[in-house]
Figure 1 (cartoon, rainbow, N blue to C red):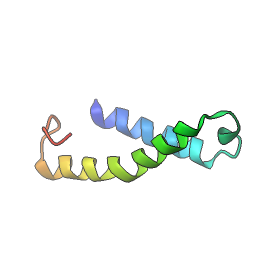
Figure 2 (cartoon, rainbow, N blue to C red):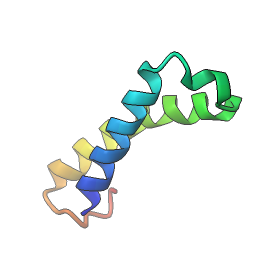
Figure 3 (cartoon, rainbow, N blue to C red):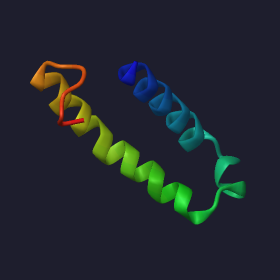
Figure 4 (cartoon, one colour):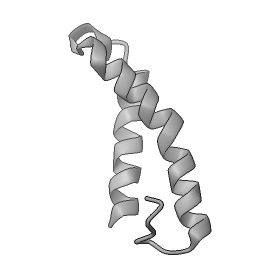
Length: 59
C-alpha cells in the first residue's frame, strides 16, 4: 500500500511540476515541498527496497 501511495504522489507531483498553470495559484511553500519530494523520497524508497521489507524502519 505504501508503494502505491508513493507512486501516486510521484505522478501527481510530476503532473503539477510540468503544469505551467500550477505555480499561478500555488503558494510559495508548494515549490519547496515539491523539491523536497523529488530530492528526498527516491533515496528513501531505494533504501527501503534495499532493506527488503515493505514495513522497513528506514521508511
